[in-house]
Length: 587
Image (cartoon, rainbow, N blue to C red; front, side):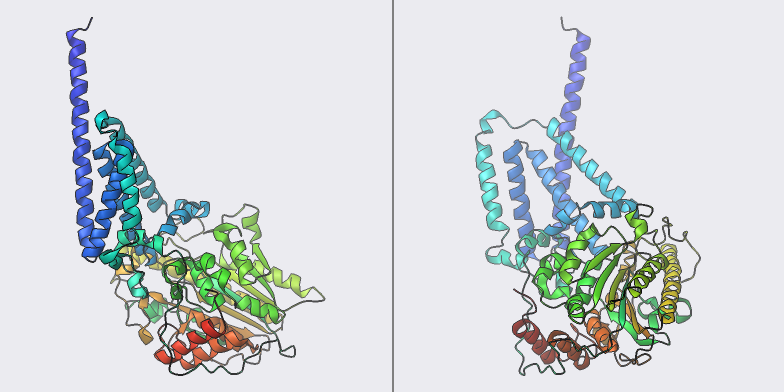
């Protein structure tokens, strides 16, 4: 028997369920409205806006065909596109590059997840909370919303077919939509914070490497002083190249950063520096693997289009010339010293393709006593390198060494007091900036002093051996300071190089190397990272192969620049020579 009390309770449940369903409809419409606002605000023109709206409509139709729940379909697809916009905005704030299709798989790698969880806990927690909230709301909407009546069921397969066919037509961008899908050829355009949603979907069309675009040069490239085989009689110094993570000279970039507070001899030159000064990197805030690629191949990743963002995976297997391969031809033994597990970030595979003989993880990371990201100092890394060199010195058939060392002591985040980093320092060292930026700069400068002391001690240890050596170190990119640095006004950069891409380099020599103390780069306002490898060969007095001979000649003709070279005819002739005649990359 159904009592009045039971009937009332059922009625209350029915009212609540009806109210919740109404809220789901309202929430879905709000999500769609927010998406429309963002698309109209951040997509640069009608073709881009229409492109996103068509993709939204087709994805919503696909979701409806699979679920027959219209509010769920509209809301979930709108949330998906809003999430893409938010994640792409975050990537741009940190790295000055929008999100692409390939990033979806990259971010699922365990080392990336570990980096986010341990290094950027606030960002990781925001992502986790957002994912949980989106997932929970999606499940609730699906459960509470009734599917449309059975008589509409026959339309579901048709909706799925129409949606998939429509996506197959729309995503490639036919007709006027091609303006939304064309691949940007200029880095300034490709790396803007406009068109974040449309470029995410369009990136699925640009996963292959693009042949560099350059104008026909009116004159041929003339390369001289080349060597195709090693010159055995030439002295071969040991070469140690240190990638100093997230290191730049703030005094050259930030107008409020005075030399007395910010400048360090490590960044500007020491008595035994053969060459030192500002360096033009090609990434900012992260993407260290691209700086490695540029140094070791002599090629900016931006030459190869959007696929260049993944150059160690997509371009490197096609590259013919690298610095480790040429040094190996000259008799060198090449070793990488890695500050994390050597298999992380595809390191072992990539370094073998570059031509390195061995990849070594620091023993404390290998045995699990250290994590490596923030609790392994530069000094500890250099002590391990000294042990390696001593082991090689004890060998009767010792070959000259090329050792590539990657540090992580100055990796972000800054100002958070993670284990292995200095505690937060809120002193107003820079009165003109806010508390948060003060803390991050104080942290950065503290770690910079640690690195400078470690470099100095390592250089002294190399000098005591009495053997010729080169110690080259450089900054792979500026810090992101968790997005804070982007809005800070910068100094007018030299040589038209974007201020966000200025770091430093320093090539120190010793042990009787003939060129010690000769500042080869004194006239260079900025040196492009793609030309640093050739400069190291030059300082070492080693013979170049035809590729690096051209690299050296470009540095001389373009005053140290590559992408900003003022002589466009020379730059075009150089690219024609290395790509068309030397076949540097197999397209």
